Length: 251
Ligand SMILES: [Fe+2]
Ligand SMILES: [Fe+2]
Image (cartoon, rainbow, N blue to C red; front, side, top):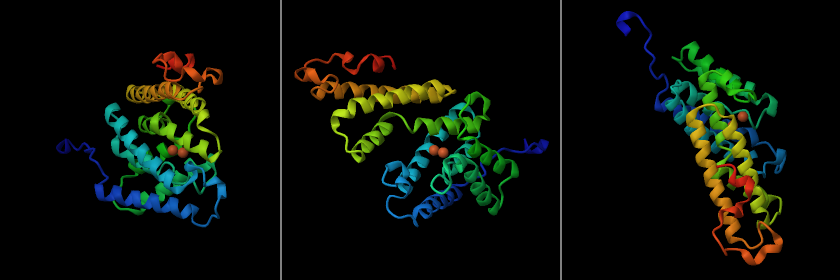
């Protein structure tokens, strides 16, 4: 192809460079909260800490990379955008964090040698688009992969753990776990309806099933979880209706 003068689309991001980006993003998040006193902006909630945000970012990188590969998107644009997408989440207001994050990424990428302007703009465009609330089919493919990955990280087993953790912070008892699992199921159902690609749809389906099963197991093991008057029936059957009609309908 090069002999014909056509630009070869090679991966511009080496493993070393990606590792340097990861370090930059991790440091940026840690610095964003280092001057805050305990409880500033509810840091005690798991998803407001630098640790959580960095882990969320790594999850989104893995999901977005998988979706991009299968959907034929530019993998490097997608994974670099995923890595920077929430870099400003702890320093900027929610409404501005996508645009501020794109600026931070642009500064980083233009300070390094060798990235084509088209690559930098595609990455920053996807970061800016990641808060988009409309029809995902209207987005460039790489931005769509990122938004889908971002949505998927909030559901499934991981989404369930986060909401259970929050129950603890709110001093709620395990008897509320069925209701909380229902909320994860609702969220998963919404995400499955919103994602556009077959790959993201398949992941959403799998994650919904996991929560569905967990919800059913909770109902079978905890006396009175579904009906306080029905405490004697716990573990008495494997009737999947224990999870309730709404949950069953999410399959
Ligand atoms: Fe975000
Ligand atoms: Fe995110």
